[in-house]
Length: 68
Image 1 (cartoon, helix red, strand yellow):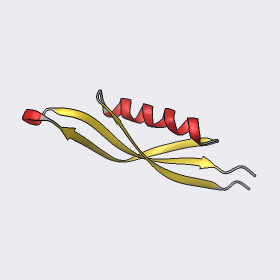
Image 2 (spheres, rainbow, N blue to C red):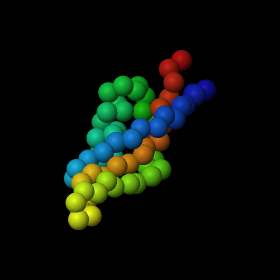
Image 3 (cartoon, helix red, strand yellow):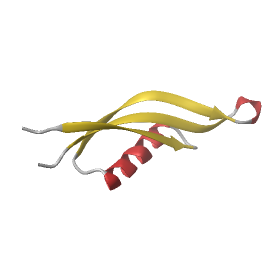
Image 4 (tube, rainbow, N blue to C red):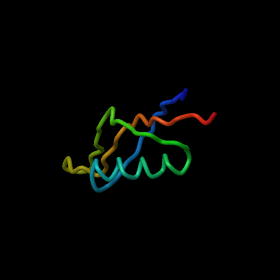
């Protein structure tokens, strides 16, 4: 029987939401073993002057299986 755990990660990108997800998952895989998937629970943006988007942010719920 496997036991899984979920951890929350917030990642950002100056390019897009997709890039933020990719960078968050890349970072999660450096630290966590047995990553099985993730879901995006929130999207936000940071705006600068004139309302221009300067940063895309995602909140990821990453699922990984704990070692025996």
